[in-house]
Image 1: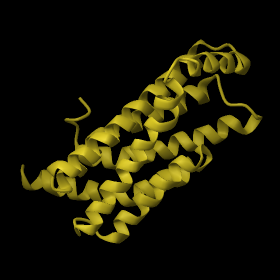
Image 2 (image 1 turned 180 degrees about the vertical axis):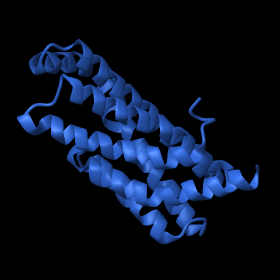
Image 3 (image 1 turned 90 degrees about the vertical axis):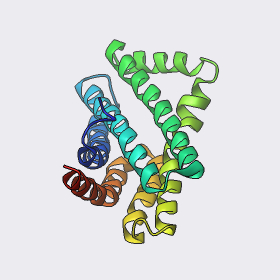
Image 4 (image 1 turned 180 degrees about the horizontal axis):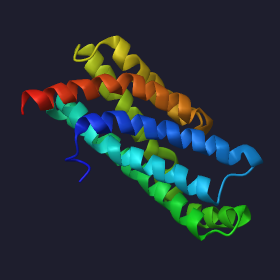
Length: 195
């Protein structure tokens, strides 16, 4: 189960898989079109894994932010955004698996977007909660001096870069990695201390 996995792995793998997805996405688009095919599926599966790995990351960040109502609601919002983004990626994976070509994909996406609330919840507003949750929790951690500003800055920057455009995913992933790796070391030290 992902929530029970070793936290150091989640803090390292989640941002790395964001970067992997971004790089595969760029390679997939070199011919002028993205999907369907192996690159589409591999990239989306990598991003799905990254999103699922952010669940234990957010839960640990809530604890580091002192629990409490504000931290809890921030993480609940971030997890809701994660869930919306997971739905988006699962839709992408299913369409990528069913479509015979790019035109077929375009028609399927058009049908999905026509479902009431789908565009707003799953593609527009919902995912923003993921980014907003990262920004708010890391600002709170920095203000409370639970993490140094140099560690919070790349995560906040990465979270702000993510919604700016999918072509920036590798940059965002690298920034998230820079800020989250120290948590992996901290979690590993904590696990050793409790062993």
